[in-house]
Image (cartoon, rainbow, N blue to C red; front, side, top):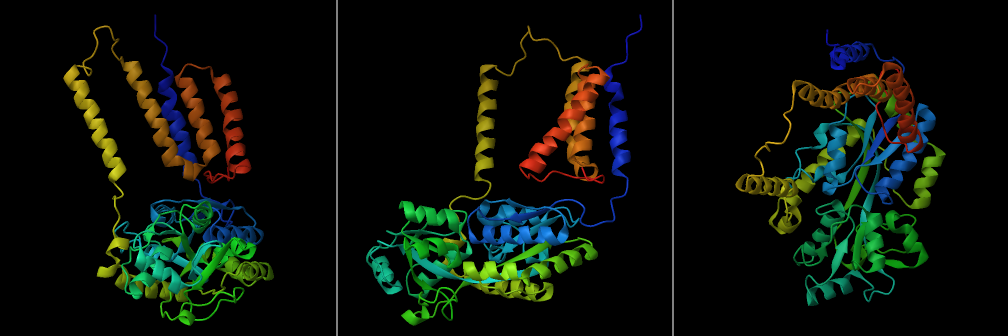
Length: 445
């Protein structure tokens, strides 16, 4: 009696179908699917607020959704790295911030401004210090006196360890002849969560921009001791500058849009044109004015020069002896993966000593069919990773799901029916309802 062919024999046919589809040319219309805008900082902060406003306005001009994704963590490393390494197809932009000029000097990443193709600088904001309304300090001189009397007794935040607001505060302390770490910095990813910590008593001081704290400032729940600017900031004229209080220290940050290197120039220019329309529009200018954000648009070449100038300035600051406490971190980025490796090694050693790795005599041997099925599972994962961006989520998931079900012995009509329902349904839930960016592929879905 002839043994029927195993379902896995048909697997190469499904994979070949996907490979043929992936070779088809993409639509010449750009953009024809959603664009992802990566924000390296948490929701509620200034960068997130500007990102979402720009994204909403860009959607009108581009005619496709522009989805903001908060890729936080690593003091900004996660978002900037994800943006720099994104596919160079014009469907991923990053709201890069001044931390891009700092992370590589701190040894946290090799990503630098040269890893991006600048589109446009959007705004520049100066740092300011905030305390709760019931705090005992009324000026930066009184805050300095408190720090001198009790070094390392006060806690501050505003961003992650070594971020621009951290450097701004540490730089002022150093400029005043104090140690840069005399106010303990509590790393929090973003001004929004930092201000929440201020209100709950988790920190005593927050350093961020005036617009980021505008709501709490206007409600009278917090007050600003001063802004690190040359002149008083429009919209916040009641806040004195540090210079008015006897300090020459100034510091601030910037935000702008950029693409990964290698994006076709015609696509980059299309985005430039759309962004230019947005930043010149009344709605954007009205938003920036109402929230107090500085408006400082600059094109790609000027933006590149600004990033280079900041990179040199912050390189000098962060490599100086006074900023060792800011530049260094307690734990390196590989500490947690290292711990996992050590724990796994310990478990394997214990199992080896106790004989737990020996194969039980009662355990059934893995036959050829079982090995093939395990290989199919691995192949499906790899196939999705390789083909989804090119072919699209729905087609890739649908074909792979049919192949998987057939491999498990499910009849072809049933497998097709499940795939036809499940693949589009998951796309509608995640990509449409939840706006999770999923690969569109050459057919647009």
